[in-house]
Length: 158
Image 1 (tube, rainbow, N blue to C red):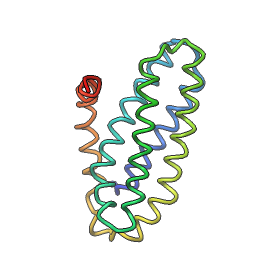
Image 2 (cartoon, rainbow, N blue to C red):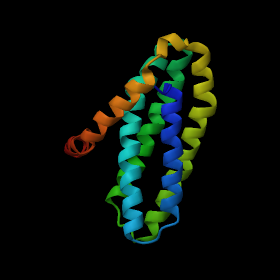
Image 3 (cartoon, rainbow, N blue to C red):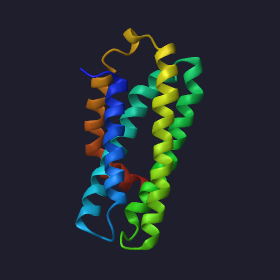
Image 4 (cartoon, one colour):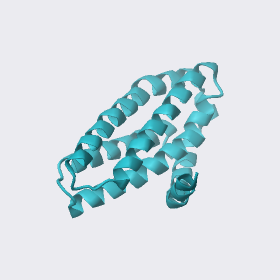
C-alpha cells in the first residue's frame, strides 16, 4: 500500500518520462500520438484524483487552504493547455511550442508540489489521518480515467 505521497510522486515520474518522449518526437507520428494519449489521459485522471483525495484533505488544514487552491488553479491552467494541444494539429510547429510551454509549467507545478506542498503537508497532516489515501488516490484515478471523455463532452457543452 503506497502512501499518498509515493503514489503521486510515482505518477509524476511517469509524466516526466512521457513528456521527455513527446519532446523527442516530431510531426503527427505514431510515437507522438501514443505518448501524448498516454500523458493526456494519465494527467487528467491524476489531477482529478489528486484534488478529490489529497487536496481535499489538505484544504481542511488552515495552512493547506492556500496551497490547495494554488495547486488546483494550476491544474486548471494546465488542463486548458492540454485541451488546446489535444485539439491542435500535431504536425504544426505551434503544437510543439505549446507543448514545451505545458512541459515547463507542469514541471514547475510538480516540483513545487513535491518540494513544498508535500513537505508542509507532512508537518500539518498526521500520518494516521492520511493512512490509506494512497490506495484511495489510485482507486479514484482509475475511476476518473473512465470519465475523461464524458467530462470533456460535458465541458464542451458549457
